[in-house]
Length: 140
Image (cartoon, rainbow, N blue to C red; front, side, top):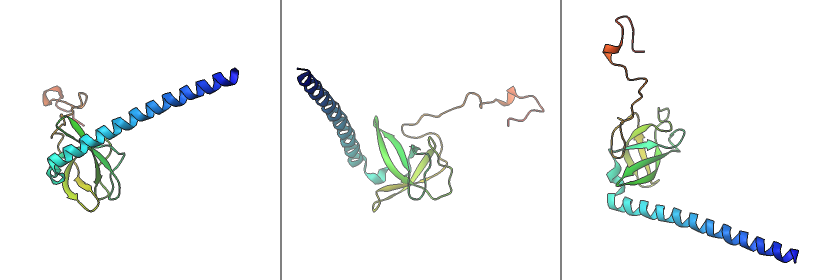
């Protein structure tokens, strides 16, 4: 009787795990399908000249990922940039080229912090007005 209960619990656990995995896979497929449809609609070369946000710790001439926001969706892009550069996680960069052979976008930095899907980010601590400074104080 104890063995039967153990087998029953194990079967229930496997069933539950398979349902969770199935849901995750469906979500990934759905997101990827939306990205591909948006890419077809926009065209890969249409992103050139626009801005994106770097997702990886750094971007090099062999590695990098960035997010591009369009029409309420986020596209996950493979990006490259000549090294050394200032592109780190969270940086805004301008897309300057698309390379079909490697399916990657070439970036330059820095780009203005405005563009499609990005809001201007301001540091409250660093925003100093000239009126707030004493005559002998420097803003740095």
